[in-house]
Amino acid sequence: MGDIGAAVGMRAPSLDKHVASKQDLLAQIMVSTMNNLLAAHRTAIASPSDPIERLRRATEAHIRYHARHRLEAFVGTREIRSLTEPHRSRVRNLRTEYEACFRSVVQTGVDAGVFHVDSVGLASYALLDLGMGVAVWFRHDGEHAEDAVAWQYSQFALRLVGASST
Image (cartoon, rainbow, N blue to C red):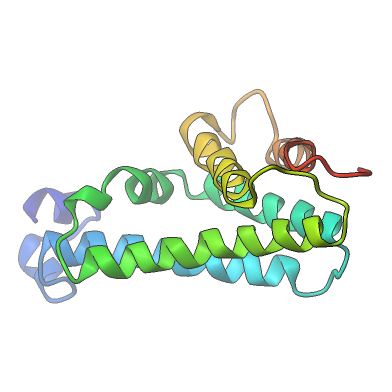
């Protein structure tokens, strides 16, 4: 806790007033990340009814979150094994809910005849991997601007699901 406190500019005893343990801190980071992703997804798909536009917006929100919150995304992806119960189950349930959001968007497009995939589940996992990959390599001072990455990845997503028209 001393190292964590130093990293955020607090003494360990002061940090203890806010966080009971490293386990609780990790859980807070991961739960907050998943709740933020869920909120961004819901906002992204709230208004369009067109499956293509819904997937484009959902993908852009997913990509932007991972570009803007790289460290949280990295922790969320790599450290679930470090969580103990009941934290691990809570985060897994949130992850399942988030995946179901993408699965629903893809299924709606399949049902409308505008997406063509062999497996809605595998397509949703691939879409999720797009964002997780961005968290690894993206830099705001890098070669590609966030807007360009979000747009291009949304086009990749539409191709991934075999969108009838983009």
